[in-house]
Image (cartoon, rainbow, N blue to C red; front, side, top):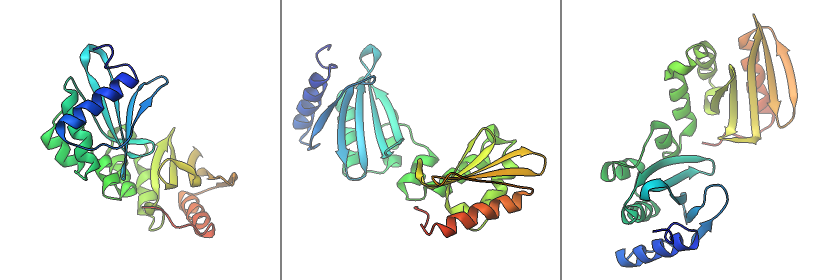
Length: 219
């Protein structure tokens, strides 16, 4: 088994199983570094397979460059290869979870797959008890007819809004409450910063900045 889990050995093993199953995975690359394994491209993203302890393999299906939509662990590398093949051929994350229960699946991942990551992230944040204290800010941001189109996140009590998920360079507005009735709005990548005395003013400032940069939000 040691030869199987070592870089090129894992790639060869996956290739052999794919041939036995009669499936075509395309080019399978060796992944080195702190989390070695194998990587397979697909039109919808990429899949990666990593050896783990006790003969297990972890498979990840990336629905975004920086977001894993589904992952799972199995000692059956043949099942892992089948998961990758079905996903490359268009299987939905829900379908994969139903057929292979070891594969995770979440509402946010479904939002990415459906092309509505911003809406899914808003729902996740608004329902999260972890962000209970942030809920008034979240509700206000979501209620704004323009800002709800952007991808949200919370960081240290600040509402972050991005044109494209995880892409600060695409345009980001950060709304930070820092004192009673005082808010700091930071716009990136321009590096602009303004302080205002009401949440409504902060939200409108962010919305105006997004409008003036003339780049529509990405779904």
